[in-house]
Image (cartoon, rainbow, N blue to C red; front, top):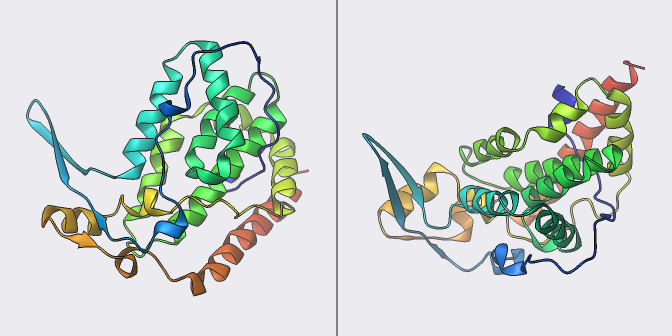
Length: 237
């Protein structure tokens, strides 16, 4: 379902058990906020040798760090996973958007409509953050999340009605682009940051992020994409 991989929806209250659980907010690392973007970044190269293959990444490459957090949550007990998902929803504006994919996965068993909204919210916010990156290689990193967590897209396959309803809600959401976490989580995935890190140099704001004067146009581009998707879905009724 191609349209399910392009757009967004709001995450509403997550209904989970409230018994005492082992989840701790320390499971999810602290993330820099947009207000900190002016601080120069200093990354180091990390070599991960597995047999004859060596994979290189940077110390603050956000995609890998988020995936590590999400894998930790998914390996926990069921109730702990639910507690983590609820915490993510409550703190979503301070987190990189991909954390909401886990909340969507948790919602799938109890509320498919809300799972669709949460998943699509994560995806559109992710696309918006990626559009802020000057390095055009950086946005490729968002593909890892759909590969890592395919449950919701699979559940929505062929369900145009659910997707359309979710898209309509997100189109009306006033805080659609109100998350405050820095887009460095995805912009750090680019080749440019790896080159700078390999030289033990810092990377400055003007080297990795588009100026705020561009952001209104980036937001409009996402809204235009939502409108095109809704128009396509309307023809499938």
